[in-house]
Length: 109
Length: 114
Image (cartoon, rainbow over all chains, first blue to last red; front, side):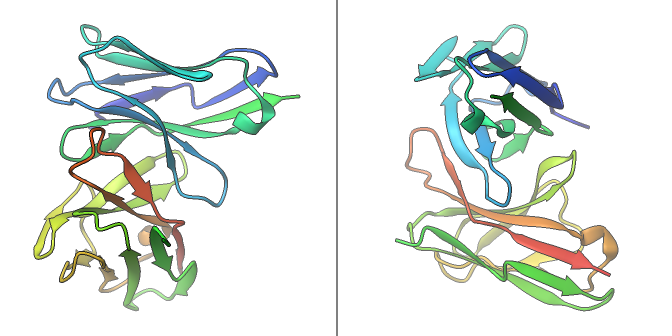
């Protein structure tokens, strides 16, 4: 049973465009929703995270939008750059984290 | 500070062999976890520990053992390796005192079981 569903599996965006990755979760007990960024050959690193008491969090070009009633959250990358090309994972949890299957983002120059 | 270190970086095993993947952290974090990453499957939790002497199973624990005798170390043991355990393994740590429970991941161990 997959508790966190992530889409799309892959995404190609032109430089300067907006990248959007979506996740949906099932367990209403989850209270922490992070996004991780992973470059080839490296471990994942925390990009941005949100708690369910807010609907949006912005850090630089990265924004999480959170819809508690729909049990969905999304990552928006504004002004996407080639250096943003990586795999992105959403996750959700309370004591442990359940990860989505990942989205491979390619930002074309 | 080294953060989270994992050894070895690469390992090839034959079916039935045993081995231990090492994970060490110098961040004084109470919480440590092991994940496996397979193509198209994301990261799946194998085992985790909330402190020395305490371990618990994650989503995919079968075929793996762990122990936590110190805060710093959290080894993952494969008792009898199987080809299905071919994967990239990541160790992660978290400070329970942090506001967002950020997990810090090690660089990973790429394991191939023939």
